[in-house]
Length: 396
Image (cartoon, rainbow, N blue to C red; front, top):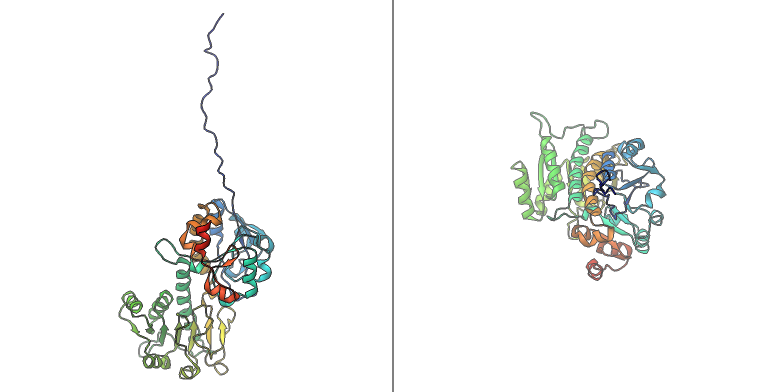
């Protein structure tokens, strides 16, 4: 009997595909409805990056029209275009404008909502719906990285500061509804004066833009250490001062542009008597989320919703807010850079609940969690008591 098996086949080891136990998360992108918010969180390029990393993106039809991108661009990036309800039913919903109570009822129970804090713009009913549906609501402007920086808040503040100066320059130069003057002047003509209250990122961005146009810049803050840092960054052309009332009043009288960048209960308000000392036609911006509370006697105008400049004879002084929404496409590109990084970190945590536990910067930005308000300002807006989120984290 021939035992020669030389012609037989010997099985070889072959690599087998390994399936990851990872369920792709869906991201919903609803459009902004009924608000002055025009900014959209993601560009088509950002959607492509996220779909390549395993996310499924559902976008409301026409949601990105405010940044002049059509639906076809997002479809080529991998997005699924559908109804608002379909976008709201995703695992993670991103909306820079506060959602209404009716929209929140369409969120999936236990879903994650990425938005801006804006407690003054959120209704008590909407917050109660977030709590009832156990939505994990995260304020992007409070998200911090491992070094303690707040990338979303910082980039939006920088955009606000630069945009305020760009709008103010256009308003001053308008011959019909403005003064018909250049912000920086020319040889033999004294330049305009810009008074900035605050010395943070928005203030420094406004100061750089104003000085680049040739204006005289004065910066005020009660935090001398912050002023010192700003002075080192900006150089000797920026005039800095503590918030001394007499010095500030003189600056307000001669200012052509006034920009406020700080808020808080202890901040001194500019009352009606001091406002009346300002020039007619002075351009006033409040870049905080307090909607003009620094100037309580002035009518508040949304920069994005009021394209036509006001008539000086009817309203010689008004307060403009929401400056960043005038350049929503720039904001979208900046937000995309931050969101792609954040969502990549989130996907590595294997679930939204784990992300809150594992990412301290995300945990500090959470304002509703497991049916409880875990942010003081949001709790006050809803008329309930705030709970320390660390209690839930330690028990889970």
